Image 1 (cartoon, one colour):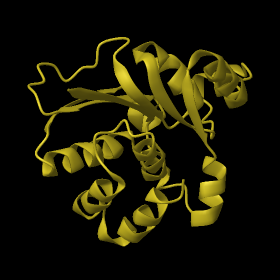
Image 2 (image 1 turned 30 degrees about the horizontal axis):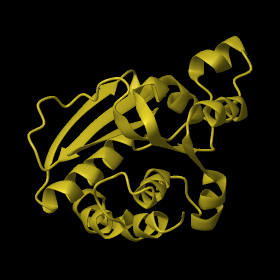
Image 3 (image 1 turned 180 degrees about the vertical axis):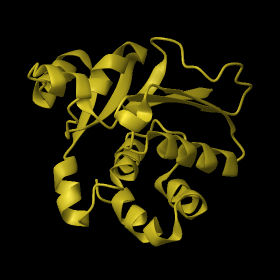
Length: 190
C-alpha cells in the first residue's frame, strides 16, 4: 500500500523541510519513499508543493496523481484550495488557519480572505482539520515551527504512515540544533 501525502504552502513556511521529515521518518522504518517539489518563486512568497509517497511496495513516480492524495497538509488556506483536486474521496485536509496574503493580492488590493478559503474548504473536504496556528504561535512564541505543528496534527489523522515518535526522531537529523527543542514542542502542540 502506498500513502500519498501532499504538502503545500508558500515560500518560507518550511514545506520542503516538513516533507523531508516525513521521508526521513519513513525511511528509518524501512519504507520506500519518493518525493518531489514544485517550487514557484518560493523565495518571494510563491507556491511550494511537495509530493511525498510512502509505502512498502515499489513506487514508480514521485508525483501524486490528481484525486489520489490521502492527506493534504496546507500551511496556508488558499494553497489548500488550490491543491484540493489532489485530495481523494475520503482523504483528510489538515490546514493552517493563518493566511499569508499573496503578493499579487496585496498589490492589486483584491481583498484576499483566508476565512473565505476555509469556508470553501469546509464545504468541499469531507475530513477537514483547521489548526489554530495563531494559538500555537502565541504558545510557542514563534511562527517558525508551524510546519512541524501541522505535521503533529497530520500524524493524529493516521494518514502519514509514520508516528509522532518517528517524526520526533527525524527532527534532530534535519533541524538546526538551536531549534530542535522548539520543534519537538511544536510537534505536540495540536
